Length: 135
Image (cartoon, rainbow, N blue to C red):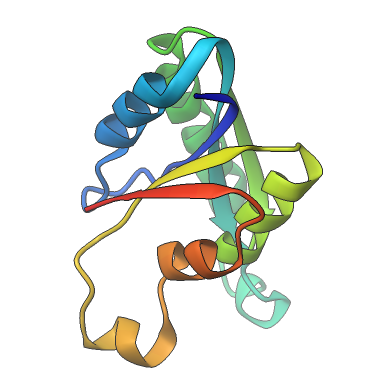
């Protein structure tokens, strides 16, 4: 069905990353490229100066290691770790890499999502391609 699938993943417990990867594999044509993308949220400079020097570097190393483990079990996949605002970065990455489907896991919406909006909701509203959302 799809040849270039983007699976934004989060390494927190609330998201069904494995389920999103399973759905992506089901939707993929034979030999399709699956990209697992993790966005490290940008920390404003005024806040970053108050963090210990190696905290951000150590966190990025942990995320890179988690990404390596995530893609090890997924044939025809690659992992990307980028920095930015999650919603905007996912959309920009999808446009820049001609993605034809995004499979994204979402948490159950709460009051904060009604006021602020969630990453999945932003992706659904503005994606340049098909989007499958898992709850």
